[in-house]
Image (cartoon, rainbow, N blue to C red; front, side, top):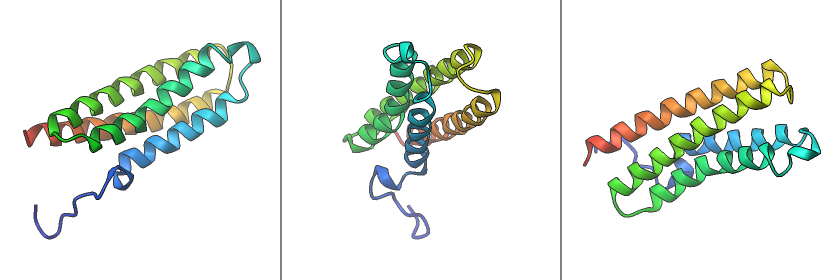
Length: 126
């Protein structure tokens, strides 16, 4: 590592974790307007998937090996795909407008790219 590069002190310093937190917050805000009968269905699934993204990033970063971190990043990528699917369903059910869904799909695409890049970078260090 060169003197120009700064190693993150922890997961809170990772931009991908910060963006994961923002997506989770957005999902909580948006799902609060879903029909009450979805509380234990789609709302619960979406919130769990959204929380799983930054949670896996933080847990992986706290592990002792790069291989473990890579595995948790892969788990976060899976949660992004799961949430993307759930967003599509919510949009098709008419629970929110296409603009809100498109905005969140864009955020998830960005997260997906960032996680993929981080996973590749970590994998090259093994």
